[in-house]
Image (cartoon, rainbow, N blue to C red):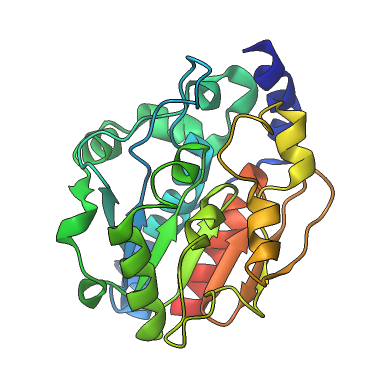
Amino acid sequence: MKRVLTALFTIVLFSSCGQHTKKENNVTTSEKAKKNTDMKKVLFVLTSHEDLGDTGEKTGFWIEEFAAPYYLLKDKGFEITLASPKGGQPPIDPNSKAPAAQTPATERFDQDKETQQLLAQTLKLATLSQEDFDAVFYPGGHGPLWDLAEDKNSIALIEDFYKHDKPVAAVCHAPGVFKHTKNADGSSLVEGKKVTGFTNEEEAAVQLTNVVPFLVEDMLKKNGGVYSKKEAWAPYAVEDGLLITGQNPASSEKVAELLAERLQ
């Protein structure tokens, strides 16, 4: 795993997080945020896939890409529901637990037993509908490239959110979920849309170009997306209508910020 861990020291340089809470006229900031959002509901969809191709190593979702958006939205008063294809505990990429990958958001998660318990009990994706939510968010990690990109329930859910004018957000490898999503006319959901996602350069840096089932950058371009990026590991997020995408782990909070602004 040395090849992957080496890249983690670069990623951590760009991660950040923070929060502050106070009381005003006996109404907490969190309560005021809830009023401002009218308790908007966001569905988080995580991968259930844990095998890193044929390498014998493990993957899953990246903790930072879950924790930073989760706490940003939660602290603003949004109600969050967690789901995955299989339900239950989604696999955590072991490399996202490495010291070099830690951020204030992941450290908060490590101390947050309540959220850990919720994560261990994710709902089965097939049981959920867009009718009960205002937006959907996909954290990354390599896992989604194997299961969520091909999952019929996920594909249908994204298309339904989009059809009903509800935001769809994804970060890092998670924009891979747009591989098969379509508009009503049969065109790719990302065709003509400004998008970003994990770059070919970043995939090469972690030496998994020949392991992953497809490269996110190449797929988005092939599907007609107007793909853009910044230098490797730099925070970068793009919003185009209902689609909000982020380039890498350092972009997870930016994606959540754009989603929160959109919903508010």
